[in-house]
Image 1 (cartoon, rainbow, N blue to C red):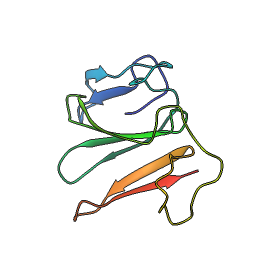
Image 2 (cartoon, rainbow, N blue to C red; image 1 turned 90 degrees about the horizontal axis):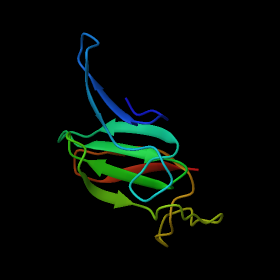
Image 3 (cartoon, rainbow, N blue to C red; image 1 turned 120 degrees about the vertical axis):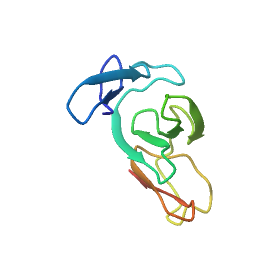
Length: 108
């Protein structure tokens, strides 16, 4: 579960037993402000989307961040519609990873 609280990512068993948590709520790099999307890719990595930090992050199941997309806290109001300019995200809302490894992000 990716939520907007003190411990943003919580893990639960199929029976509803709490298994642990990771991540921090806050306003510093590496912390989460407004949880918006969680996706697990075919390789078991956890992708988190935060529309206030303007980032999508990829994590190992233990919480270690292995990739950050977007610039923390930075956005532009005008983006290229085809993504060709590589501009930062503007409130990303979700992500998905295709079987060939391509990453898709819904933004704005």
